[in-house]
Length: 433
Ligand SMILES: [Zn+2]
Image (cartoon, rainbow, N blue to C red; front, side, top):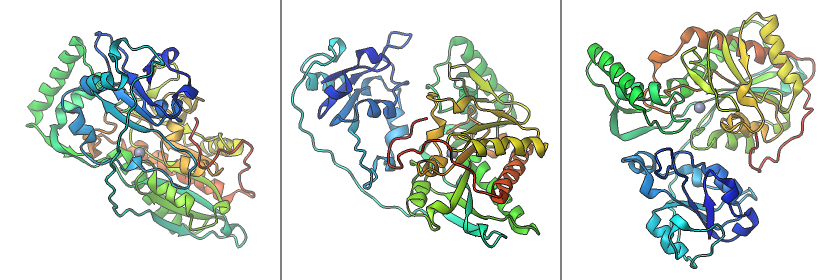
């Protein structure tokens, strides 16, 4: 069945009509009149047509050269469904216009929404491999004989997105993303204007004067999440060497597989090594090494680019389950004179960047555990080979780490566990920011 054109929800067939069907989706036209794949959001399509047998997006003819090799040459572990979940997702695949035409029995170009095509029979072959993965956990026992049976979890992820088979030129990527994709991979693919090409070439030329081409195939993830996982190590050391220990116990959790769909944190929260109810809060640290005035840290809900600056820190989800926890974080900054400036813009309900659902804290929040996500936000090197240590703002990262230490200490020393005063989610349901 032709389901409509992405980007125009009025063209979509009603969700109920998709039940059991293979829903074929057409791409919208970009400003240049060509069909444009760059805005298609798999999660949104899957949520909209959740009862479909499959979703087929006709985008193979419109992908840039090298796109498939770059993005789909590796297996995708996140295709795996949680067997304990009642949520079933439709199969999702990409086709050429020729295949879409065959399925619909008419040209997709002029297809009308709801038009029923031919019966499709398909065999979906899945190659299953297993690979080792482990969370690294440490517990600092609390000082109070009663409260030590409760835990504050501090977390970060220790994985990133791997490497490319084909190296790219570091400085070219740096210049391209800086001028034409300020949010890195968290935004549309770069399509430089003639003015931007002038700036890109000038930047590459100036870098070439400093050193020869630097081919690179490794995604180092210095900010994502080298910054968080190393800050967590520093915070753990400070807790462990202090003469006074907090009243509650603290769990330090380095989660694996965040980039593959929060595999480590969802496993740990489904199979916790302490009673789940004894976890009073989780503080998640993911990307705290940037946030300069020159970094595009995200967008406002209206789509305006945001930037960092002195003391910049984004807080996500801090009042989504516990108002008290959100207030405590604010009070820690104020009374401890940390001088941080909190940006809550990305925490807005229904924000299109959906950050609340995109890092390990969600694994905890879905079980009703209050969370705070600390991040200095996005930047042009996000999920690029250029996310490297030389671009980290270590002074700022240190300030943020000291603040998170103080915040964790305050949660761990509170006379009572932070009060949950907001509705809890369905632990096996889909996250809704
Ligand atoms: Zn991350």
